[in-house]
Length: 543
Image (cartoon, rainbow, N blue to C red; front, side, top):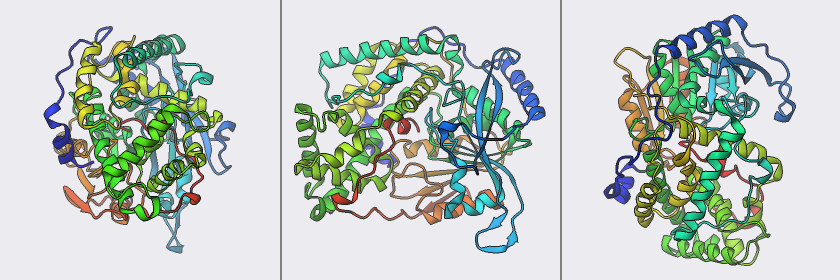
């Protein structure tokens, strides 16, 4: 997003301080026991290593991808207590220079990747090495993916029966009634109780500090003295925690689409900033559609496109498309366009087709397959547990209602759906952490490379500036006037060149550098789009 746009749209609404203490008290910052426990776990992991073999069958991975497990303590204060296993994937360095077949590229070690979430899995990440934009990096590094604690096979969390996870059609009012709010509050309370019931007493240990400690245990298990890490979205937050907790263990670190790590913003205010930023990105999308009115016929101005969208939403409220696509599903489909502008043509085409009487493209985009329900439910459970455990949230519904009613007046697109996603944190049954003050001094840490787009909605640009300020010696590369979420390996050659130079040679461009925006997507006719989209839950997050 544009940092200026956030404060223009919502700066006068900057939120009041949290009005109530967290439920269950606050254990505060970790004491001496956790660092000792992390050191014990890392030493054990280095001795054990990782026995890579066949991957879990449900991953559907090719034989080139090998998998193993790493044991970590559920509670680092008690490293001899209950252990959980993290699943890990690897494709070894190819040593092949894609531009010179006769040159053997020396191995630089393991590169660990996390895609964010919280709740997203990186198990498939090593396969990206086959793509042209990653081949030089794949030549030099073993590419390592993993499922963080709680995700997939890594001691998975659950809050509801996956068979009941997808509900469709659903509503998505931009200005909900008192009765609708009451219903959603009741659902949030029930969801929080379900997390405690289905995930047990260990629920409190699924948090960002433990994700950072797990990363150090993984580093040791891979036999690396220092970590090379690429974290995207939420992965930038616990990457920054790692840099704060283990600065001498960092070799190179890329933080792609950085979260604002200010302890005062984690996570309630971060979500308010995100809702404001999505409004700006929604405006960008509507303006793009308007510029291509000759293709989509949805309006020649952003306001006219908004009216077309509102017409579709109102029509779906009266009768769901395909029996399953209501306003909630429509909003979910268009939310993904706030993350990735290469989704713009398919969303615009589906909306245009629906308003002309053909609901099939919209149904194909909006209705998830039942086979994805378990993964989506698990991802949402982890997202909720980590964010709720990480920090204090208002426990008085009146605070949420006041802050978001104000925000929705200027940012209606995502505000209330963001509330419903996070509201279980108001009723969370587990104790909360006090966020770590992410900060490193000069010389404590090798240069960290931060990538950010000015108009990113999921992780607003102001967060990248704050991350740059807090990590001494870090370097910020900005994609100007663009809003894609997750830049590394994407369509911007300038950004990719900076990332390659850093990972392969350790070169950074100075404290800050800028890249011109990647080209906007080209409009395409409705008939071209038949594919589905990632679920909202896999995308939601600071991530």
